[in-house]
Length: 484
Image (cartoon, rainbow, N blue to C red; front, side, top):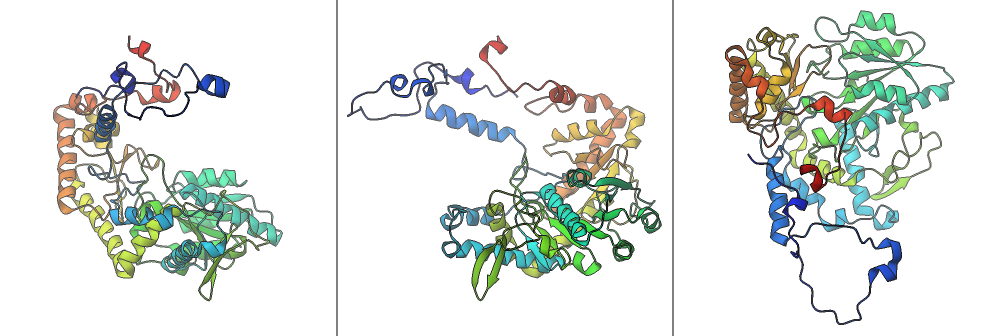
């Protein structure tokens, strides 16, 4: 496949993508009117409209996305997003609303935000919510900042937050940014938090435990209630990372198990495409203990009238310039309303079924280091392929030749040569069968023709890149002279 040339290479002198009527007003020299603001050296490409349109359409077909093929990233929940949600978010009354409108002129938007918050509270069993955080890690930061404010209000000096080795990678960063020290807790042989180890580590210096549930191994923390009881007996709080809510929405409510705080990735669980860095939203739900510390403003509703409440003296303050990523909220509201309680539960049960179907198909082909029941994702290991000189990265690159995106690789860190696979509920049985067949074929190639994997991908627009060099020698500029 030949690479797509840049617009500069496609440029031809004199071509243009516009046709304007003859001027009926005096011509003005921009340089004399605007001085240095009008650059004379733009050297922009000259193309027709059809040249430009076809260029970008061709580029769009080179990119892999969930609308084009299977996308089993285990750390990102890349499920298909109903186009009805996109249409709803583009409605003029929703996408054109200005964040500085007075409350009286934004009742529809405020009502949607308030109702979404109520849905999230019901789904998680929590007492209060903020929709303001812009993404999952931002929600983590908000939650841990509220934990800090809680202990400051009590006059207690607590300096540590416990983070299991099976947690999401952003957890320690959120802890550090909040001014705490991150202390790692080792998982037991089942891949869960060990209550005995937790009791040993939880001193009077500990403010909180951050739990990813299900954890990054795809395993549910079966002793969640005991974990919460241990922490609460020491006066500490428990934060649950809700990035994997797709595994149990409609089935389990973290608030009922005793968790104090939780962020929710609307862009993972509630239907917004988020590959490539956005968009996202990370609402945080809390219990009564942390409710006073929610960021301002909070969307309030009374007698059918909705407002932004700034009168919160114990708040941690504002986290975004405005009130959150509203377009993502619209999609989440629409998704929840379309599915209802039974539909949300069915989505979770199907996600778990699909993950276990993939697990059953590949068990024995790839190593399975943790054998506890999987939920929404399963983590295999490619260590059994190393005897052929093949690594997990080779498997991931070869999978691209089958028209599928690679799973998450080398994470979680507690699994050597990790392959984290999350098929999500939106994949059909046929898609799963094709994926399992491709993974089996790759394992066969590893034994019989390992060079095929080491050379992969061979059917993609760009061959295997030196990823380490790309990060160390970043060069995002280009000129025709560079290509001779």
